[in-house]
Length: 507
Image (cartoon, rainbow, N blue to C red; front, side, top):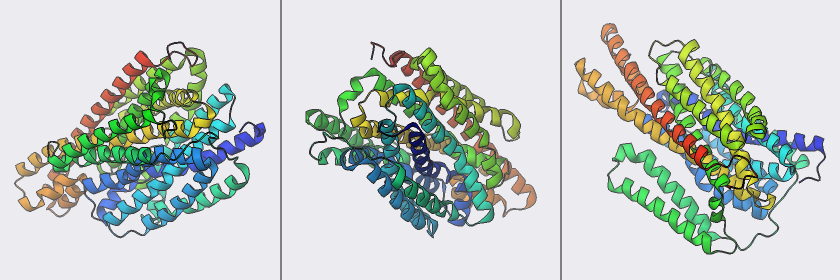
C-alpha cells in the first residue's frame, strides 16, 4: 500500500525477498543432495525426480488457489500461514527415513510455498504503486529468484559437508521465525475489496488439471508414453484445463479471469517465463550431478561453483529493468532468451574431461545473464497488465508459469537424459561382459553405475566408470540441446507477440 513511506517500503521489500528466498531455495537446495540421497536412501533416478518434483508439482498446482486466497482473505495473513506450514513440514522432511517419506514431506512443503510465493509479489505490487518504482522493486524481487537458485546448492553443499542431509531442511526453521517476526510488524495487509463468492469449481479444476499433466510427464518414461495411464493423464489434464477455462469465462467473479490471456503483453510474458524456467530447472537437475559425479567435487565445492550463476543473475535482473525503460520489453526479453539459448548450446559441448574454468563456467554465467535479462521485464509485464486489487491472481499466474515451467523442465529434460543415458550405458555395460543382475542398477542412475563399478576389480571398474560418465555426458548434451530449443521458441514468441512497451497499442 502506498501509505508506507519510502524507507518502510524498501524494508518491506527485504522481508518479502527473505520469504521468497525460502520458497525458491527449496527448489534447488535438494539438487546438490541428490547423490547423497541416492546413497543414503537408495533413491533411483525416478525417486530423485520425484524428490525434486513433488515439491514443485504441489507448489505449481496450488498457486492459483493460494493466490486467490490471498486476494480473498488477505495477502499478509496467507504469507504468514504459509511460513508456519513451511517450517513444520521442513521438520518432517529432515527426519524422513525413506525416499517415499521424503517425497511426501516435500509435497506438503509445496503447500506452504504455494501460500508464500504469490503473496510476496502481490504485496510488493500493492506497496509500490509508482510504475517505475514498482519495476525497480520487481527487478530486485526477480534477482532474488536467480540468487536463490544458486544459494541453494551452496547452502546445501556447506550443510552436507558438516551435517547429515536432513540439515538442508532444518535450516529453514530459523529463517522462517525471522521472516514471521519482522513481517508481523512491518508488512501491510491488502486484499481485493470486490471479491465475490468462493469459486470452488475453479479451485478444484485448476489444481487437478496442472497436477495430472505434470504427473503424466514425470512418469512417462517409466510407464511408457503410449501407455493408458500416461495418455489418460495427459488427455484428462488438458480436458480439465479446457473445462476450467469454460467455467471461469461464465462466472461473474472467477478465481482467474481467463480473458486476461487475450492481452498480448500478459500472455507473451507468461510464455517467456515458462520457457526460461523450463530450460533452467531441467539443466540444474543435471549440472549439479555432473559437478559431483563426473568432475568429482564435494557437495560444497559443487555448490560454490554455482556462485557465478547468482552473481550474474543478481547483476542482470535490475539492469534488465533499466534496459527495458530504454529499449522496451520486447527487445530485452527476446535478447535474454536468446542469450540463455547460447548458454545451453555451450553446455552441450561439455565433455568428461572439460575443466570447470572453461565451457562449464561460461555456460552457467551466460544462462544466468540471459535469465536475468528475460524474467525481470517479463514479470513486470505480467503484473503491470493488472490492477493492484487483482495482484494475487496476477502473481499466481506469474508464479504458476514459473513453477509449471520448472517442473516440466525437470520432468522432460530428466526424461530425455534418462532415455539417452540408459541406452548408452547399457550398451557399454554389455560390451564389458558384466553380469546381467546389475544392469538395472547401472541403468537407473549414474550414482548406481559408479557404485557397481566400485565393487569390481580395478581395471574393469575404471572401464565401467568411463562408460557411465560418457553416457551421462551424452544425456547432459541432449538435455542441454532440448533446453536451447525451448528457450529459442520462447524468444520467437516474445518477439512476435510481446508489445514493445507497456503502453504499446498492440497489447
